[in-house]
Image 1 (cartoon, helix red, strand yellow):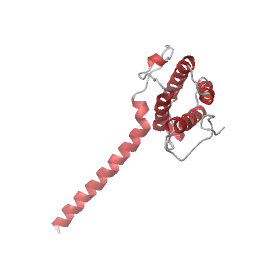
Image 2 (cartoon, rainbow, N blue to C red):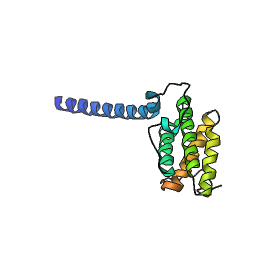
Image 3 (tube, rainbow, N blue to C red):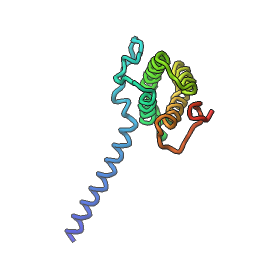
Image 4 (tube, rainbow, N blue to C red):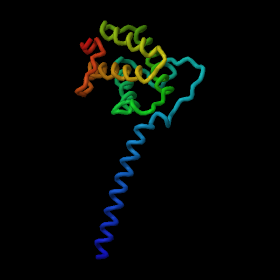
Length: 162
């Protein structure tokens, strides 16, 4: 009888620990950006102010899509979000796109999509703009990097949806 109680106690602790770990993991997905929040300042955001230097548009698209997946994907767009961090990311997108457009983008459809992202990211960011930016980067990631996901939002010329 005592052996059954010990086994039941151990099993209960394992189940509790598993649920606690799952809760912490899900919570960390939601708060990942908030933990590294960048304070607003009067500096102009430029491509040089961000840690990555992108040699190819494909790398830029993949990284930015990953950012939107981390911060807004999987239903997190409907939760409170750090608009300041989203604005900083949008400003960085504009800066990188400016560099790519200056150095030359050979593909006309890609150039149109980058210009559309630049226009969208240049206005004051709200949840609607964040959702649309995520969709652009999602579809471009599929077109340029073969991102494997069944959904397509039909917002890009490059993927052939527009």
